[in-house]
Length: 274
Image (tube, rainbow, N blue to C red):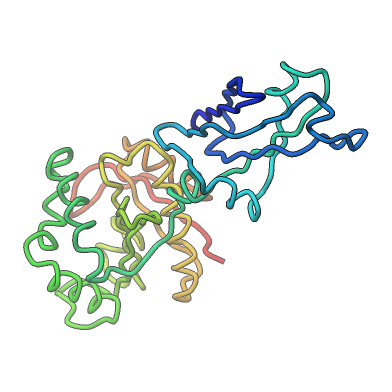
């Protein structure tokens, strides 16, 4: 969670509060003990000067948001000024912090063209080896989206391919953090031995932040909706980050095999979907 900073004017004197409770909005309420008013407590003028979370400056919206969000109670600020417990209602503002990173899986569509371009450029600049997999989308996005849609419907499949549902992990700003593929079956030797049901990539700039773990968790639910009872996942034996993502989602290690198409050690895992 980020740094929360608030400045309140009490009788025209500004006092500051600094907390680390996430993105917050704030208002001030009369003390509940003894039912005394602000003026009887020696406060004749009380107002919010500013409220900031990291680089976000919270303005008038903070008073409105407090009305309908989860409220936390902090007591530090006014206690330092007056010997009475005051309540500062601090609102966790998901609209700017948590919800900014509220993630969901979506089916690829034309509305994500600019987001996909940024996604591809991230690979092109920071992971050239895997960028080629998404080059088709950069070259002709409408055609690429139609191709992904056809694969999900089992139409116009290339040789050796099976029906496969594609999803993108996005936040509420519709930025693409990752792409994941859920194959409807693994009814050929390559898939059954060294590819498995699910393959995915997290954009280089978003790695190491738990996005892979979340994306796989959401994809397992998608697999269950497709009627798949358990999924096979494969990772390079020395790809401990990928193996950690699988294990964090309940992956049960089966064995190490040597790939036939890609002859290097592979770790096989199974995850129950239901």
